[in-house]
Amino acid sequence: MIIDFQAHVFPETYIAEMKRLDGAVILEEPDPHSGMTYFYDKKLKCRINTATFQGQDIEKRLRHMDQLGIDIHVLTIPAPGADRFEGEGARKIARVANDAIAAIARKHPNRFIGFFTLPTCDIGASLDELDRSVNELGLHGFGCFANLNGQALDREEEYSPPRRRHDRRSHHHRRLPCLRRSLGYPFLLSAEPEPGLLPEASRREAPTPRRRGLP
Image 1: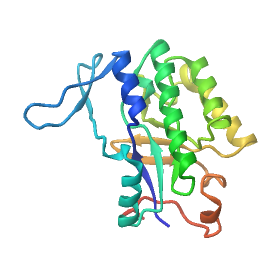
Image 2: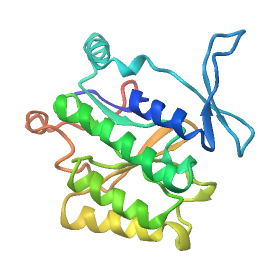
Image 3: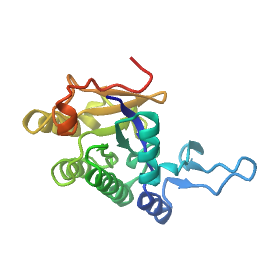
Image 4: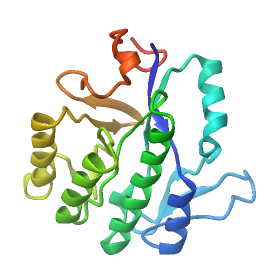
């Protein structure tokens, strides 16, 4: 079984909310020379990612997965995630993103696994959204980068509450992985694959999750 953990999507509702917010990160107009569209971070004063929208067509994505022999996509929001926004805008865009990811996973439970994003500018809101994402939306993990809001993930005073909540949910409910990306490559931070992460039919085959092309 082939599971692609580097599977991103910019849901249409997420992009629409980003445009409505006109917050810390904006979507530029297409570059007149390359035709590419970029996300621009007002704080960093630079482009932070290319905007690619091909993955929004889920039926087309499924056809590509079949053609390439990909069994499952673990869906995450690439940069910019909700951590790049502030205040109510961060809380709103996290909910919009997580709702969209969950809707895709619910419609195709044997092909997609959803990870959530969190409004890490607000620890209380992050805890609430973590609970909602797991208990109401059925998402299976937290996708983030090697730093959040410019701070390391092990910064105790800022990120220990969501980490403890994440750990408690993993211990009492199910093991919740955290997908951290560094230099563009994902790492699954979990002691062992979470039993509920894979569809039932897949678990009977006892697969070992891995990225296509990697050992």
